[in-house]
Image 1 (cartoon, rainbow, N blue to C red):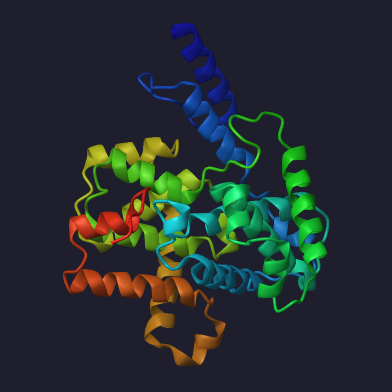
Image 2: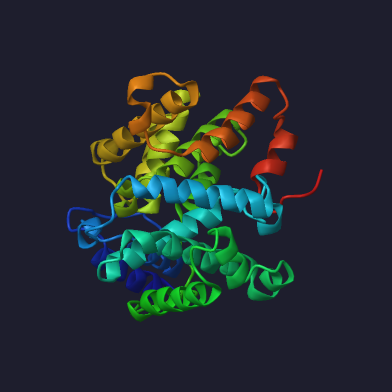
Length: 332
């Protein structure tokens, strides 16, 4: 066993950037290597957007918001059928597929972006639920084409989903679990919250999930590791919820994303705070002159506005919160 752990530690060190050094006592096994390898495998390439001349950064918040709206229409805002801790984890999965696919292919035209988006979403839901379950719900290519206002045909959706899966699978040299399995920022957040014993702090959980769900709209975060997004979200969530983050907690947070100092998280944390401030402006309608320039993520804002209002009114007790944010969502 010791030899195996030494091997996985050696392989993990090879994957990590040169300036990162693992602590002597860092527990490393196959699962640690697999997780980091998965994060690295599905991260978007630096400058991937430049490959697509007709695409603009502003297109992606609109696309993501539409996918969230579609997701809520299909499953409701609790996503009980998907049995996931975060109701929006399938959208994170779809956006990971989308950004990675766009990193690997030649130029995609703007009039095909929605097709790629809805195809990635179909792959994500099929993976989360299983093909047999989606068949029972009639979630097939024809139905997804209908939700695009028939801008595309069912055969186009089928062809695109096949192309996306082929491209994603072709570029994987090592498959830890499943070719479509992706470690998302929401999974990283949930894991980190549990290790910090923060998963029962309602306000920190709400802020953390809100920040992570906002981040999937912004292409800047497509080039960040999920563990780094989660770490930044936890630090900001603790600050916003006025929850003390002790030195020991900060050490756990840094170790979760293989960072040696908080300076390495500053860029991501600042970008996340700007995103949150933009959402606040959009929600309150302030800075109306610039409102047209704000990213559009109204569905996520609406979803969390309801949750924060329930918390203010005292409706989100620890017992009730577990019905919203735990793996097996049960009907009330």
